[in-house]
Image 1 (cartoon, rainbow, N blue to C red):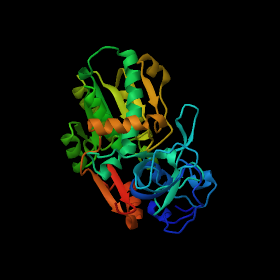
Image 2 (image 1 turned 180 degrees about the vertical axis):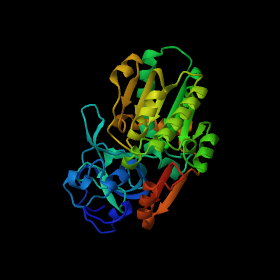
Image 3 (image 1 turned 90 degrees about the horizontal axis):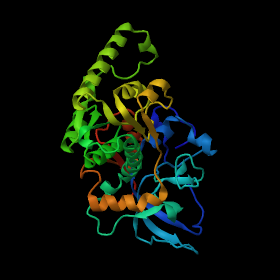
Image 4 (image 1 turned 120 degrees about the vertical axis):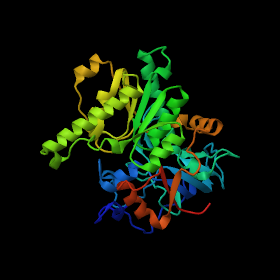
Length: 377
């Protein structure tokens, strides 16, 4: 992407040549195969919540921090390197780590000097390359969705653990986990389902409603509640709009009560943010948890602190996952089949990446797992 552009989100992308120096110790030359289109790329192109070009002090940034690459060469030096030429690897999106190995800056996003997957060739630290399991039962497109699954794993572990601090021994079958968001929320709800919870998720298209139903998640058609989101500036002065919102919120909470036997949502996975946050909090059960690992539509949230205390609500916020946990999550995916369903992706060729960016920003993609192909397998 370039520092300046005109037009839509896709207009921030420009095909160009770039150069990088020779491999340094512990670096690998890689050939990106498939990249996963993530919300962080949409945020980067929209220059919100930050302008990553300005933040990095760079005029041009190569985006793309989750996907599958082929290793072409390795400069091991004195390091214990566990990748070799020809390996297919998952790129782990860690730029700068904190003292507990969580990400402070994301690779190919706000971390300066990092080169993403929207390039025919790139180089990266071998510590960020996690090999795809030998003889895997799953396709490369299925593995290319790993970023949503790794993120969901970390967020679910924290949210479920917090819920259990207050509800120590009740059967999860008595409790509802609800989500709105995309692929991360879907992956998280499949973990909740494995844990024995009732699970439901909002969806805004026939394709997504059918997909959720096929995968054992109760679909809630978002179109049934057209006034659910907070109003924009023009709508705030419309008295009829406020009546429509009140009706949509009441209808939604009525449905939640039906699904939860009148108790509300035990764990609410809310990766949307501000437009629906008041609805999320009002839908929470006592001792409920609201958990998020993303901010698709609004980062600034407000709440009535006293009400949250009295209801014993726990708020969980996570970002990415812990780097040393990566091999274990990958192995769980392989052995347990916790991975994107076969054929659930949609793939754009490299020349169509600007179109992918615009389709994603406009909500025209039915799949929870959009991706782009850079080089052939």
